[in-house]
Image 1 (tube, helix red, strand yellow):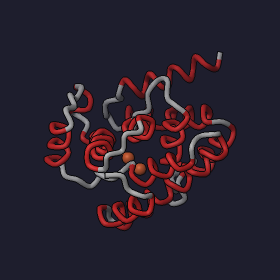
Image 2: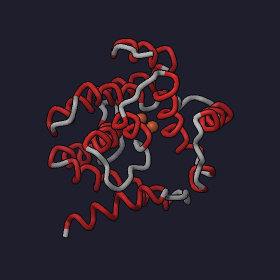
Image 3: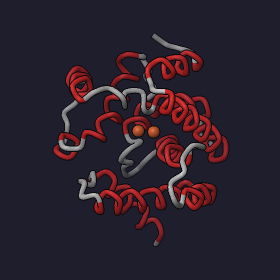
Image 4: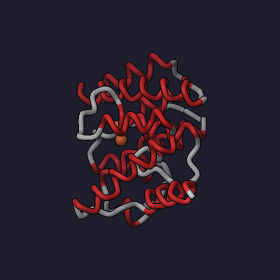
Length: 190
Ligand SMILES: [Fe+2]
Ligand SMILES: [Fe+2]
């Protein structure tokens, strides 16, 4: 089943709370803007943006059901970090329920929370767009926005440099994919 972009907005509107729908719309807009600026496909960026949190409000049981039906084997960190599951189940939902076959869109959704090493342009764009969407108002969001205008790598580095210590302070596990993304960025500086 292939849908038009407007159908994805409609789906997100009907699936998500108003707050998260607004967030998803804003992420889609930010992703389109970044795609145009950095030479990625704006349509793919918009699809990934509007759908990236599509399963975030599903309960744990539903998330695990999607994981099973999607044939996903969870690693130990994901097993113990429910907040990471929606990126995986979002990918499975896009692939299996919506029939989205584009690997880049699917990977962008899949890695929008942890990031990973060797990210594509689109993957970086969605990761960053999720941080800088219009409604975001955490301290330093302006710095994150400015870094993202310098380059995607600067944006990624700032985003991961915020998220990893934040997890440490809250005594939460850090997914190895996040560390791999961070280390790769650090090595690229030298
Ligand atoms: Fe998310
Ligand atoms: Fe999000």
